[in-house]
Length: 336
Ligand SMILES: O=C(O)CCC(=O)C(=O)O
Ligand SMILES: [Fe+2]
Figure 1 (cartoon, rainbow, N blue to C red):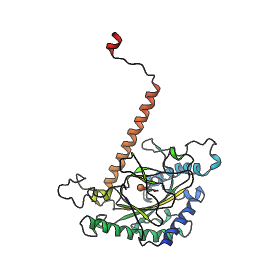
Figure 2 (spheres, rainbow, N blue to C red):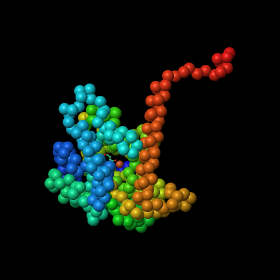
Figure 3 (tube, helix red, strand yellow):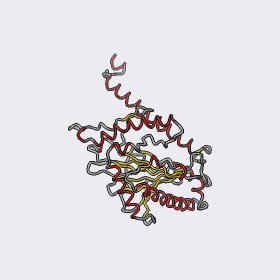
Figure 4 (cartoon, rainbow, N blue to C red):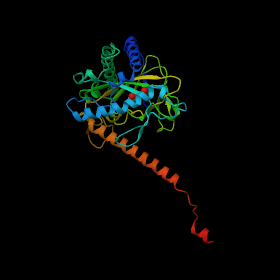
């Protein structure tokens, strides 16, 4: 289905997986102040040497506090509750950010870049469990990349090597129950930028894939103990489009909250992005080799462009609705 497959018997201990989810649920049940200590909205890695980035983070954290308080203070919700909380503005485009989710992120590889001060220290066991989980998932991801390399007719290490010093980021997504789920999304439609993603989802379900450009969406049914696997843009380019970068989104519902843990395997920022093999008669999906950082920059600016266009179209529509319509007839009809 649309670029996803699920793996069972993957060798990651079931106990480790259940500890990881239990601790994550405990974290999201903690008070907003506690969670905000680890706010990473904007997805930035903390660079302590860069005061500009640090300031940006403080601003983001304040914005996000509104978001989390809205979510948790039921008392503050008016009776005729409308979709009102997600209206944080993207400071670049003015587009409303409407994802109905909270996230916590662990930048876990390369290990030398780990900043434990940004890893939640509560629940206490979480750090050690996450360390083990991220290591096991790194191993599993490399195994999968080995199989995929062989499927491309390359040496087992080909895809891993192309990542140079592979990055890993663990993102824990918590989607609270939503009173009006049809007005929002847990996570807007996207493709993951990296090489390969391993997702652990609970039994609620909400991940959806498409293969007809968003006309229909198919739910990726939860399979107990399985990892949902998809390739990202980098995997797509390296395979010259043979492996699809899965187009997906997450929906929310009014009955229960949902938890998913996404482990993203990305190449190093300066790794080269270019097909590893171009089969006879095929054209390269890329005009020239670029770095992963450049690939990511292009993706982001394209996303911003699309968001801007949408915003302009919306504004135009509102303007059109305001202008009274004059009846128009061809001149011949009027003169006839
Ligand atoms: O929660 C999900 O099912 C999807 C998560 C996802 O796509 C992501 O974090 O990139
Ligand atoms: Fe994703």
